[in-house]
Length: 388
Ligand SMILES: *Cc1c(COP(=O)(O)O)cnc(C)c1O
Image (cartoon, rainbow, N blue to C red; front, side):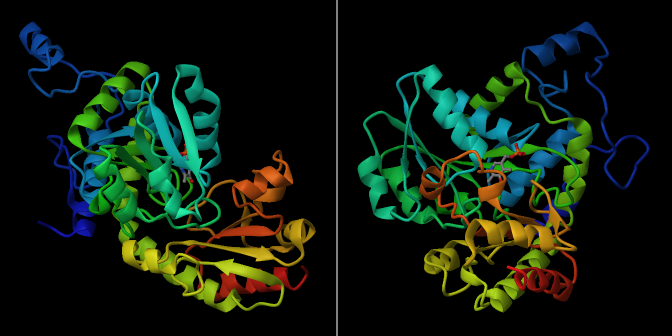
């Protein structure tokens, strides 16, 4: 079998009669049939002909096939955003009376879906703290159906032990569903550790250039079939244009992630002992509390660095205001380096106590390290730190 980065470049679903080298865009909502019999056979699922782009589209399929190959999965379905992949994986597989076990450190919108909407459908949930891995097994209930985690977590960069959860999922016959957005398959492949499903926000590193929203879920064939049937009826299909952008993006994912990780390690090493910083986290630094697990399951430390400013909330605001190059924006995983201060922005509505339970401290800064020259990224951060 070809190497993963070769597959990300070479997988091509369709070529038209024009024999174009780059994949064409299939900007069409539906597909034609030559006659009534062909159309009947497609609707009867006797062929895998494309019918309608809410169900399938060749360009969307190409992006999906690449992600299936990169994650080492059996099948996949691409969605309009990361959240529709997450939501689709919950709604297709969980039903009234089931219990979802997750981690208290998860993406904000995922937390909202679990806490606010799943109970409307009679689906129970509970959380295990990211820093208490010994609690997972005792938290499993007779009606637990799925374990859902992300690792590294956003924004705190906690590392969850995938091998341990893979073994628990197998022992209790649970679906292990992993959000692999922060690592990407170039750094971490949860299926190798026993995950049944992997979800992604393609909006982040997979696009990597801050252009489009997208998502994808890959994993075991029978689970993906259920997710596909749910999504094909409820409509979170990925647009063919976004699929084209994302499929082209995957051709450079390997080289981009290598450089993001190299720049991030450099920044982390240079900042770790800075006088304005109380503590810094990067999975590939020996000082990270779960460094051993990171080394075991990740091929590099990824592109995110976070640190706690000694000056707390005020220093966080000053830091953002003092940056001259890094962008202040809600995204991450871009060629352009991005700084965020969750306590005064994305998590400002929570009380300080609520923020603490999700590991968001007053002076927490998250840097999504871009592809600019490492010295330029460092210098902008250093001059801003001097004002904190
Ligand atoms: C951004 C993000 C999501 C949601 O993805 P969207 O494409 O914004 O819907 C899910 N999980 C993680 C870890 C994220 O960072």
